Image (cartoon, rainbow, N blue to C red; front, top):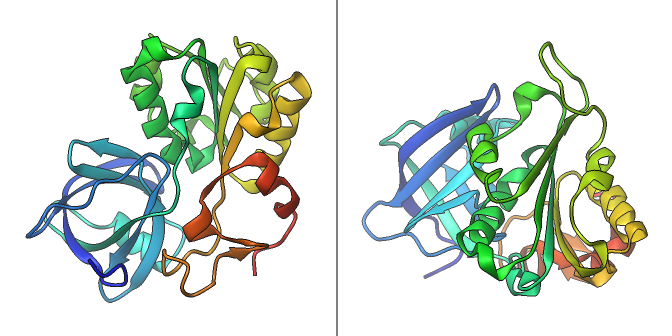
Length: 269
């Protein structure tokens, strides 16, 4: 398969998650879509508009799901797609989460905003094989309660994992903590020294979260982050996503924090 040529996919399900965020489930139109692993991404094409990198937010058998926030022309077009519509799919691209590293360990999953989308398959995999891991804590931050993704999943996960949510701006009826996601790190019921951590969200959030976890005793090499830079080709040809020695589409987006830490102060061009 030519990685530069989109494969047609058909929207089979669409869910409005928040005011500006939609999850779509895809199936191959003519041939099955390729298999994705948690943390990998696809280039999704809105025909006649353009394409954007979107992480996998779920794997329903052979059907990938993508959670998309409408922030530009392409993402607005993708969010507007309805069941039956065709969109283009290229991928899978990139290196995903190293879940083998968590076997036998406590696990921290820390998400900021739509960063929960690439981590959703991680939590599903962890809970599907719950006996292989020790304590699991999922920490989720959002700007306001209405922007918390996957409330049904959070409720379901709470039967097998500790779920902590925090918002920047509370609304009427909110009784949880207020602040940044780092606010709830002390409440995570894990042993830092034996924990593996998966982080995704704004780069500033990941940097401060990683620093907070490391200061609590989580080994830096056991912290993984997902970098979101301007990925275009998906295979390291075009160089748009170069960050220091890395081509994020090829060498990431998931990288160990010791690799990411010296690069996170580099502004995206």
